[in-house]
Amino acid sequence: MKELKLSDLPALQGTEKQVKWAEDIRHEVVRVLEECRKVAEQAPERRKPKLEKAHNRLVESLRGMLHASLIIDRFRWVIKHEKMVDKINAIGKGIPMELHNPFLVYAWNHFRKEAK
Image 1 (cartoon, rainbow, N blue to C red):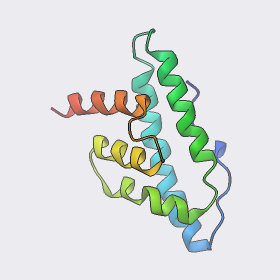
Image 2: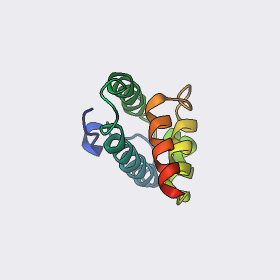
Image 3: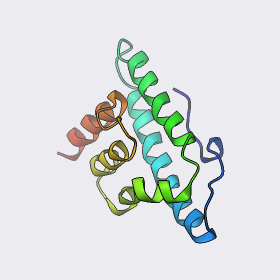
């Protein structure tokens, strides 16, 4: 799985205030996805192809989000949550059809066990 960097994502469109807020949110989304990627890289080899494919879908969805208002609407809860499992859930809810993304589910299970 390739590391996701903020520089890999396109510039956002919107007002100066929207773009600033959305960049802060997107920074946290990328940080959480990177933590999840590190967990997924420790998965058994047989699971890695499916996890990588699911990870790539998430990254492509993020790349397609060009409007700051969309980032704010879909992901603002990511920065409000403190627990990693809640941040992962917020990301899954923010990307249509990805709530049960195998990559996110794998990472969610890891962090849920870690929190116990």
